[in-house]
Length: 92
Image (cartoon, rainbow, N blue to C red):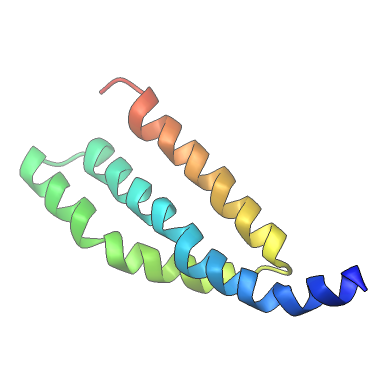
């Protein structure tokens, strides 16, 4: 019975991973672009924030390709942790 419930929740959890789980990933990727791109400060800021939405859409498409919702959430969490460490842990 539990496997039936999990099978019914698989699709909604994957959709939630794509819509909600990828938002921090896209935000942190744009922050990393804003910090580490070899451009002038204003150009880095424009580059990072103008690519936030396309990065989010790309991350959503990739999350839908995951084999399961657990893999989608795990990949979102792992990549968000790495990007968070790069964005806020590495001195500029």
